[in-house]
Image (cartoon, rainbow, N blue to C red; front, side, top):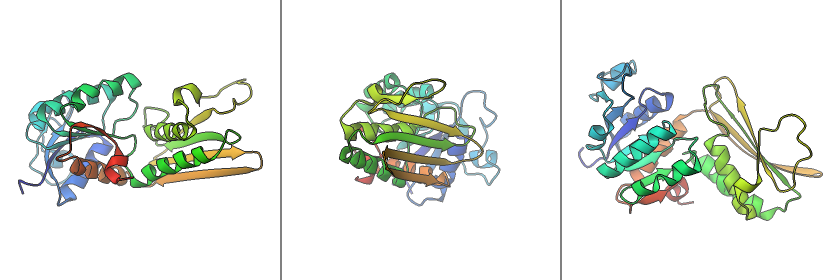
Length: 269
């Protein structure tokens, strides 16, 4: 068993945290060796399996990430930007593969990962699913094939608990469309239209966020021109797809050269 990578899950009590724990414990390719929560959380000191309402798993929830990372080969992190930056430094210190599914990170926060990536493997993606990453590649190709007669709009929908908008996946799709067109997304992004906005600017890429119920994740990329529309779409019905992708990334990163990677690298796309 010792040759099987040990994995720590941060944000263990969250919906993704619990899904990751289940995915890892159900796998024969990885071991759960740590579960991290913020200081003062009710789960601290409890067996994580018991805290989740199931059988004990032999892993105690801790608020000391470095201690947990020290006995692991990988960390899977779907938390918040500030926490992720802290975890990146500690994972690099422990030489763990750091898989980051955290969304809502600013350009400055993403740039701040670079020092950690000099010492450890970081795999960061706004979405860990195979289908979404295929959609990203398709979006880039379609955007490259069409001129600015085709307006591009990215429409995303998620559950009402999601705290950031546009979603990390929507931004991935917008970046892909901008790259396909050979432009900088920051120069052409159009978000949150409201009131008298004037006519749509040619060449801009629009974003729209829907929040409601328990929607796991839906993303459309609309290419609209006079007389025709092309719609590329991905619908997620089970967040287990993200957990499986994150585990795949953690396993893929073993033995890789330190640096920053994404799911395109993991999936060989």
